[in-house]
Structures are given as C-alpha cells and as structure tokens.
Image 1 (tube, rainbow, N blue to C red):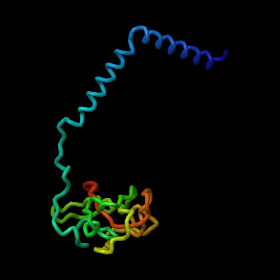
Image 2 (cartoon, one colour):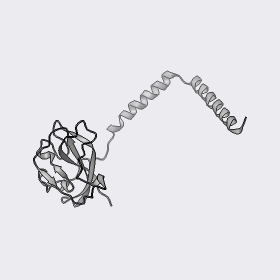
Image 3 (tube, one colour):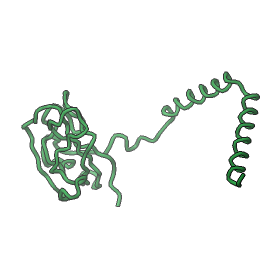
Length: 174
C-alpha cells in the first residue's frame, strides 16, 4: 500500500466517523427547522433599508422622441418612444433582445457621462417612425459590442426588428 492509498483510507475513515457522530447528535427535524429559519430570515433581507439615491437614474431634459435626446448618442434604429414603447421598455407584442450594444453618452443636465445599453425590441414588423442614426464614439463592426450597425435580435423568438430602447446602466467612470 503506497502513501496515497493510506492518505485516502485515513480521509475516508475520518469523514465516515465524523458523519456518524453528527448523525447521532442531531435529528432531521432539528436540521429542517434550522434550515427553514435561515430561509425565512434570508427572505427578509430585501426589506432592509438600502440607499436608493441613484435608483431613479439621472435627471433628464429633452424630448425622448427626438434623435437629439442625450441617451441616443450611439443609437442606430427606430425609437421605441415613437412606436408605443418608452425609452426603457418595448411596445406590447415586442420582446427585448438579451444581446445589446453599449454606448457612453453625455448628459447635459448633470454634466456626467453614462453607460447606455441599446436593446433591440423584436417580434413585430419594423416601426417606420423616428429612425435615428447617431454614431458618436461608435466603433467599426470589428468591435461588435460597441457597433450599432448590427441587427441584435438574437435569443428572441423572432428575429424581426421593431425598435430600440436606451437603458441607463450607470455612470461611466474613467
């Protein structure tokens, strides 16, 4: 018997002995009772007070149905605000693509830069209103996560493009 086999045998014996001792000293009911208490306690964590200073997002000014709106600095597509949706939500009947491209836009209200996620809304025919093509800080297609010239309706039930939303992810840091 070599040293590895002896070490594994010792480890097996130690774990088996410890498991038997634990089983003798505790009951399943006690274990389940404590597990239930932990789960109930963990479910109350979201109720604890949390600083929500930035939860509502940046202060905004401008018309979300205009291509000049500050969030649209890297948007290439149709605005969902003109097609029955909002700046952050797809219109009824369309679903957001889980894949997006990212832009960094300057908010003139607070003079800060923000990361913006552009998600295509898919599953309906193209909305032919409010088409915008802004490409500030846009990179060529060889860097696809930062390019707005690609149809991003992957991972959705339908690859039919409808419009695009612009969601603020947070303040850009340098």
